[in-house]
Every structure is written in C-alpha cells, then in structure tokens.
Image 1 (tube, rainbow, N blue to C red):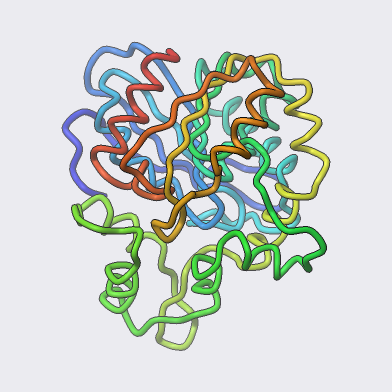
Image 2 (cartoon, one colour):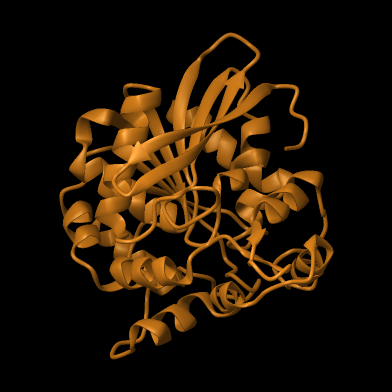
Length: 297
C-alpha cells in the first residue's frame, strides 16, 4: 500500500454468510470529522479508493472487497441484495451507522439497494457513474450481457499472467489509462493478482460472480424496487466516456435525461474530461469524488 500522510491504513476481515469480506480501513490522522463507506465496482477492489482517500482529511473511510473480489473469501451466491446485506454487516461491525455511502460503477447499484434494504444505517448516497439502469440490448444470454457491458474488462478474468510486470503491461496498453500512471494505480493493479496454482497469476475477481452480478443489476428485481422506493438524498456523478475511453460512456445523455426526469430527487453532475475508470483512478478524479463526498457530509 502506498504511503498516505493523511490516513493510517489497516485491513481486517468481517464475517458474512459463506466466508468473510476483507475490509480496508483508512483512519484519519487529523481530528475526525466524518465517516463514509466506499463501495467498488464489478471487477474492482477496495484499493480503487486510494486517490479519493488522500483528499478526505479527517474522514474515516471503510471500504470492503465485495464477495468474489480481492481478498474476500465469500463467493456465490451474489447479486445486489446479497452484497447490500453484506455491507450492512460491515457497517454494523465497523461504524454502527454511516453518514455517506459512495459507490462507483456496480458499487452505485449496490449502494442504492443497501439504502432500500437497510435505510437506518445511512443518511446519503454519492453514486459515481453507476446506480441508475444501464441501456443494454435485450434477449442476450448472461455471458453476452457481460460481454456487451464489460467487454475486455471481463474477458481478462479468464487469463493468466507470467508475473506482475506482465499484468501491469496489460493495463498500460489499455486505452482507459493514459497518464498519470501513479503509484496508487500500480498498487491497485498489483493487489488484483492472486496465485493461479501453476506458477502464474490471475485476477482475483471471480468470473462466475461477475456474470451473476452483471445479470442481476441489469435484469434483476432488487434495483428497480430500490430506486422506486429511494428515500435518501442521492447525488449522481456521470462522465462522458466509458470503459475503453469511448463516447458516450455508460450513460448517453438522452438515456440519462430520461432516467433523471423519472427521479427528480436525484441531483446530477456531469464531469467532463474523465472516463469510467479515471474518475476514481487518477488524482484529479479522486479530487472530484472527494469534493462530492465532503459536500454530502
């Protein structure tokens, strides 16, 4: 873990059905002025929040690896409701309750369902390029749904790599990751790797859990019900570019406008100059997200 002068980092495990979640805890060095839960995306881990944490002076950040990811041992069954219930256990075990839950990508969907299923555990939501329904083709198989939304991001879960350097080269060639290539970004990628059992390395994220979750967030019942009943103040941040730095990103403006018109209680900010990854995995993106978290607090 890269050095951070604003926080002390530690990791702990929280028991959930079927295993445990690895939970990153950033304790502020300065006097405490707030606490948040941070929820990562579909093939990510809690280390995705490092750039945001650096901007959150005086704020305690609790961030789990969701089941099937990172160093968490819990696996299937997954889905938005299961993740939400896992997060409720993390909050109860670490904070009791929390002022703000911030979720990136799939973490935004999970956060909305958490607010619905456990409303007394949180006050507000900050949703970063996720949380509202995506525009997806109909009639696809589960695997086709994942490929349509995630593309090479999911395909890599079936690959193995000779060493850390090979994995870092894979991401350096990815169009979504232009400069700056920071120590925090490299730490995030290194953390993603686990032993494949044959002397090679593989991504920690479970492909089976990724399929389950992607199908559930696009076609399951947990998210629509949670959005229809949403009673917590929510702030949505979207960006114009997607998972491969392509336009129009996950939320084309016509699709987004229709969604927001149906949910006027959700405030929205479109942030130019970022893609789905760089809004959290660059210093500038971390600053944008941190500013929204501080405003929510």
